[in-house]
Structure formats: structure tokens, C-alpha cells
Amino acid sequence: MSEEKFYFQSEAAELLKMMISSVYSNRDIFLRELISNASDALDKRRIECLKDSELAENTKPEILITSDSEKKILSVSDNGIGMSRDDLIAYLGTIAKSGTKEFLKAAKNENHENELIGQFGVGFYSVFMAADKVEVLTRKLGSSETYKFISDGDGSYTIEDAEQRSECGTTVTLYLRHNDSNEEEFKDYSNEWVIREIIEKYSDFISWPVVFKDKVINSQKAIWQRPDSEIKEEEYNEFYKHLTHDWRDPLTHIKINAEGATNFKGLLFIPSEAPYDMFMNPEAGGISLYINRVFIMNDCKELIPEYLRFVRGVIDSEDLPLNISREILQDEPVTRVIRKSTQRKILVELKKLLSSDREKYIKFWSSFGRILKEGIIRDSEYAKNILEIALFRTTNNDDWTTLAEYESRMKPDQEGIYCLTGSDNLSALKASPKLEAFTEKNLEVLLMTDTVDSWILAQAGFILPEGSKKLLNIASDEVSPYSDDEKKENENKLKALDSEFETLKKKALEILGDKLENVKPSLTLTNSPACIRDSSGGMSVQIEYTLRAMGQNPPAQKRILELNANHPVIKKLLEMSKNNDEKVYDILRLLYDQSMILEGVAPDDPADFVKRIDDLMTLALVK
Ligand code: ADP
Image 1 (cartoon, rainbow, N blue to C red):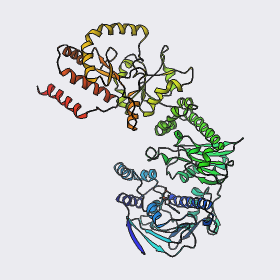
Image 2: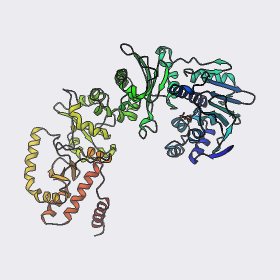
Image 3: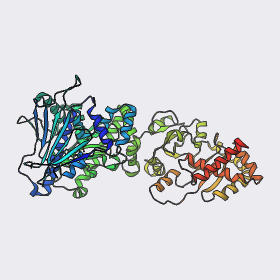
Image 4: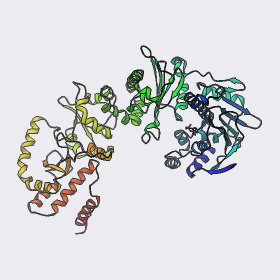
């Protein structure tokens, strides 16, 4: 086999076309991408050689840049890990990461092609912003085979056998585009000064030497080792992009300088938005571990609790052995110390951000709040700290609120913080019948739309520090907006209704007895005919159904169906049940199903539900 031709998937080809015609304002970054890849390849080679000393080659690791301004050629060469033929196909032949199609569609619809490039981080393919043809010559560490990958970004590429490269590694050669569009911004990337400027700007901190015209042109200084005062925001941003392959600036950075029994430095970042695969792919975050400035491993889960998995960055310690493995790292006491102080520092910095720049904090919270909140139920030690900086939606207005802010608005005799969990759709939650009595009494309720909120509410009793206000779930039968006197008055009125509801209740339990523990008249609903309540001590609807969605099998919970005694439908039902009208059963079933829908749960038997609605429509419109 000498040469074989391959085609990119259709969406990848489309992406390429977009890169080529891109007017992406910052075309320079293709060089940063190539140098970043070369640096990663050298890191990988170092680690492979540590594992197997026979692999070590006798060459000094470096990234070599060459250019020819006559022929308009630029190349980036490394003696890193290199790629096999399969690697070339898997890594360079496949740009379409999961979700590409959807992204392309969205970008096209909204004319946001540049943003897409920014979001998506098309890495290697950014070369097509500057070149119309790319050749990659590569030989994998430990192999004698060299391959040449060629593509002109037109939707296909070829791979052929090539003359053996003298050592392992990769050379990427760019045949640069000519400025045929007369774009003012278009730079000559084979020009020495253009190259120097870009490397200085974007790649100065790369820990391997970047050699150009026989000289090392980067300082190689680890950015986290330098004093904060010396570093410009821009340098942090560039380092973040190198580290994460995100093309956007981070939201903020956090520096840690721990000295004492355990010494370590950290430079952590909070991305500006969740990466597109954050929720699909929990691996997407990660901390890279360095020991004495030497890269050891990325995505080091041992150094950070899972609920902070959106944090990216570097931790560099002198107190761990260079040959450490993931397994050993787990049991290292030093790891625990680092983890703890890192987590503490992140929470402290987030708290500062909340008070110093609320707008930025809200941006952070909108992207990562639901991940951070997992910590409230998983980490009893820090639950209180996380609750303190948690933001919630409320019935008060459309802004976010903290618990402390809510407390400051509480009525003087209010016994706790009213909360309602439910469907992950805020406007659906706002329509919940359970809010009616509270709205009428002008009482503010927190609207909790995340799955984890139900757990927080269920465990609030154990999580909240002593003396703090209770979180009261208004879905519970026991939480009411009324004063003791009002409750008494209500009870008396309800008692009087008991005998009237007797038959209806019996009929409801006849058909819904497996789902309902009780059926009660209610005087607190204003507009809705019915609602579902959790029986006291029972599991909330959201928890029960999330557990089911997770494949678990919690005991089926019996709930309470409340019927609005003042509602015309219920009044009619009472009459019908006394007359033994069989239609009562259908309406009761509908009321139950519709109440569950408002809890975010679809009817058990949708076909049956739809049929009942059809019957009602026929009755209302036709007969
Ligand atoms: P990313 O670097 O974000 O994963 P790229 O498109 O830049 O995306 O690169 C894809 C993959 O190709 C890399 O993850 C790496 O496995 C491989 N690769 C790219 N450049 C090199 C190189 N110089 N040496 C070895 N492997 C490389």
C-alpha cells in the first residue's frame, strides 16, 4: 500500500469549508494549536519512556519551527510520541466529535460561525485558516514506520508510506494561503517577525524548548511559579487555552500557593461556559498534576472532589515522587491535603466573586451551579459553605437570590424558607397549584428546578448548621402558609366538609388506591381543581422518579390528592358521585394525571389519558 484516500464525514467536510472561508478574527491561534499539540506529544513521550526505558531515544526533546518565506511554507516539528497510521485516521481524520452536527446546524441558523469555531475548538483543523494544504509526517515512538498525511481541506485526505523519519515525532508542514482576498488582517505566517510575535504571545510558557532559527525563543517559565504581579491577564488566558483546548477566555482564575507541611502551587480556572460535552462527558474537566514543574498526568480526579469537576488547571507539588501512579496517588496522604486545601480555596474564591462581581458570578452559576450543588449532599463538611453561595430562583422576582437574601425578606413570624421543587422547567414550576396559597398570602417561595434540589430538600435537616432557618418543602402536607388561628379555622371548615366528600373520596380510593394514601378537600387552592402532595415522611415525586430513571426501584409512594372544595369542577364531581354517575371515575383519573403532569411526571398510560381528554372534548364541543 502506498497511498490511500479517505473522506471526512460530511459534517466534518462542512466544518473544514467553514474554517477555510473563516474570517475568524484571530487566525494566529492556529500556531498556538500546533505548538500545544507538539508539547502534548512531548509530554506523552516522556511518560511512555518513564514506563519503558527501552523506548528512550537519544534525542533532546524540542519543538522546532522552520519557515521559508519565498515558498510560503511554515512547519512545526516535534520529537514527541508521534502517530501510527490508525492514530492518524482516528485523531486527524475524525474531527467530528460528538455533537458536531447539532452545533453546525445551530451556528448556521444563527450566523454564528465564528463563535462555533471558538466554542468547538477545532484544534488541528485551524491550520486551514492559514494554509490551503497541510502535510503531516509522523513516526510513532517504538515503531519504524513513517506515514505522510496530506489534506487540502477539501473533504478528503490521503495517507501514504513515507521514508523513515530519523526519530519518532511529527512534522506538520503548512503550505500557506496567499492573500487573494486582500484582507488587511491577513498576515504572512512565513515571516520571521510574525512567527516570533505569535509564539511570544501564545506559547511562551510551553515547558519544552521552542526552537526557531537555532535559538530557543520561549522562556519556558511555568506560569504558576511566577509571581502574580508579573503576569498579565492575557497570559493566564493563553495558558488556559493551551491547557484546555478551549478557545474562549476563562471566566476567572484562582491561584493557590500553599506552604507548610505540604507545599504546592495551583493555577485553576473556571471556564466561561460549560464545554459542550460537560454534561455528557464527565471526563471533560480536570486538573493536571505536575511535580516540580514536570507534567505527570492530566484529569487527576484524586485532587479535586467530583462536584468541582468543572474546574480546570494545574497543581504542582514538590512533595510527591516523580514516578507516582494514579493508584498510589489515591492513597497518598499528601493528595488528601492538596485536595482539601484546593477545595477550600475554590469555595472561598467563589464566595469573594459572589460579593465582588455578581454578574460574573451569575454567569458562573448558570453554567456550573447544578454541578456545584451536588457538593451540598455529598460533602457534609462543606455543605454549609456551598449553600451559602448557592443561588436560587424565587417567586419574588426574576432575579437569583441567596438564602441569606431570602431570609432578609422573610416575614417576622415566618418559620422557615419555603421551597418548591419540581419539573426542570421554571415556568411550569411557577404554574404549580401549590404556590397558590402562598402567593395569596404574599409569601416568597424558592423555585428549585434542578434534580439535585429535591435531594437537598430531603436532607436539609442533616445538612443545615444549627440555628439556620429550616428549608420547608411546600409540597409536604405539613407545610402551610397559615397562622395557628387560621389553621384552626381551616380545620373546622374542612371537618364540616368531610361528610360531603365521603363518597367522592371512597370512589377515588377505589380506582387510585395503589397511588393514593388519602383524598382530602382543600381550601388553600385558588385556581386549580386539584394537586398532589407528598405524605409526611414520604419520598418526593421528583426523588422517586429520578431514582426510577436511574434504574433503581424505590418502593412506590402513596400520595395525597387534594381537591379544591371551592372549584366548580369539584362541586360538580361531588354532585355526580352522590348520583352514582360512572363518569366520576374518569374525571378523578384525569385530575390525578394532570396533577402528576404538573409534578413533571407523564401519565402511566398516555393512550388512556388522551382518550379521556378526547371524550371530554366531544362532550364539551359536540354533544
Ligand atoms: P485536541 O488537541 O484538542 O485533541 P487536535 O485536533 O489538535 O485536537 O488534535 C487531535 C489529536 O491528534 C490530538 O489529541 C493528538 O492525539 C493528535 N495529535 C495532533 N498533533 C500531534 C502531534 N504533533 N503529535 C502527536 N499527536 C498529535
